[in-house]
Image 1: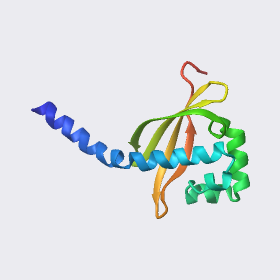
Image 2: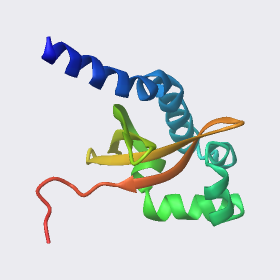
Image 3: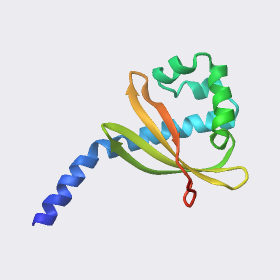
Length: 132
């Protein structure tokens, strides 16, 4: 009985994140699709107000993506992994394979705005087996 209660408690804690999974993943996929089509004005619409305030004109955002995140700009495969809550924020893990076949893990911090779910941060995770 105790295991059942633990399982139910864990399931209840996960419900808010799971209920948002499809719209969050669709937002990320839509931005990736726009970037792959070199449609950075459309890609920028999926960025949160915080990101837009940080980068200003879409050209600045485009330059940052092309220089710092080329694997999301030009990719051959995308796989959505787990959505989780960390310190009250929703983070979607995404596996991206670039045009050379290299695989990367990224975490997308998501925020809900009046326009729907938007991307508030992207973090490139260290590659497994790489250490200092």
